[in-house]
Image 1: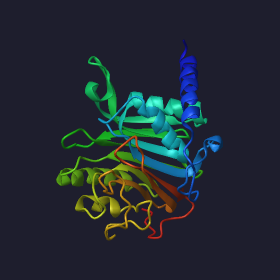
Image 2: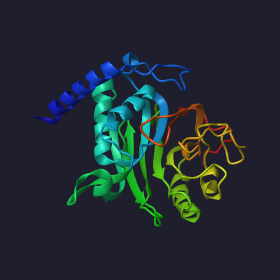
Image 3: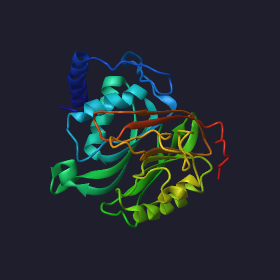
Image 4: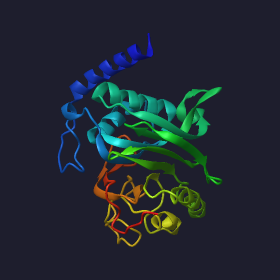
Length: 290
């Protein structure tokens, strides 16, 4: 069977399951509300999202649910962390077949892992970051940090379109918890790559709370998509993005105004989906444009 035929059959099978289970109920303002399934046909052009999809806590059946969660908010750009190439391919196919959302994809794999990503020992799956964008992506750069800590880590960067404008987008995943010095070194590398761009979006799991010293390099260049959240925020201001109630996931923007933000719990990961709606025609209130 051809790839197109296989994708159609998979989509039809999953669509039947969705019809039995039923759609998620919408609610809230546009900036943070899921779209009803019958309205999901186009992406929201100024919306970006980041999501650590969790591995190892992967179940092959999760990819249908993950696609459903993403489709509720239909972002223009999605950054995924802890992403196996095979899982991303499945999520992308479900988004197209079930919801009519067509995404381009670029991978920022930093290691190959049979234990994490399946496959076979002589052909393990790629593991790391991925970027999905409704618009084409160019000038891809994939960088491994000189010191990944307990596991290889890095960043992926592309140029793509958000809110009708070209912008440089970065996706990253910093070193695991209790590795503060390693993360500080990683943010120096990342900040040096972000700084030359007047407008940039930096998405990812930073494994660090807003007030931690290792994030100073990024805060000096950008602001979180949640305008109430900053290094000086008191407890409870920055909405937690993990099951253990930490703020680890960010939609940093540089030279761009955020006009909406949402954090959404999901049963398919130990991290929440985080999205921001942006206005690329306006700079941040701080005027940080490079």
